[in-house]
Image 1 (cartoon, rainbow, N blue to C red):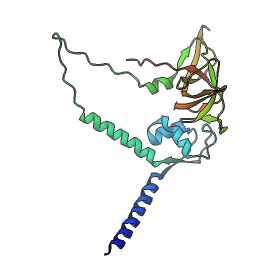
Image 2 (cartoon, one colour):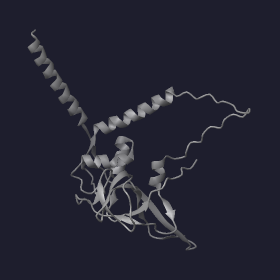
Image 3 (tube, rainbow, N blue to C red):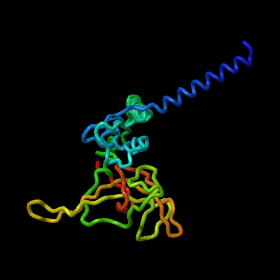
Image 4 (cartoon, rainbow, N blue to C red):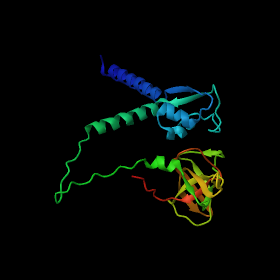
Length: 236
């Protein structure tokens, strides 16, 4: 076989493999919506990770409002997300299996104490929210250039603040409940604060302030409040 024919054959094989690989990366699973389904539930059922719901929303561009999906609609689940989550899970098991407990070196005849592990991870703690005596504030979410009603990871939004900020300043995006009172005594309890995500300033110039959603636990809407970011102390 001549070199020219070999090169042509190799090129054709390369194109075939490339097209197959591309097709595989775009393979989709289909989820038929049942009554009571939410993108959060679907992400948990299909990907074993509720926090991946914005990626499912991104792949289903026909969904205008993630709060409004209806029975018998077909939601496409990108197969690469399923494989990615399985890969992470398997890698975690392998790491755990190969992990060797380090030898404990005694100092002054006292064994070193093991480092305590937090009861919950940071994402779970943030998403669970908290109760506050007053409604915190300092700013709110405005609109996006696309005009979409809800936002997720990576979306750029305008924000309104009552103080100056700098690039890379971060804020929690929150919603609050009505004032809660004890059902029997009527004593004031406070407000339930729900954290929707984290926004980071990317522009603060000429009277315009823009931020990017860097972490999202649920859909974020226009008008939600902003409070300055702080490191949360994980319970041990």
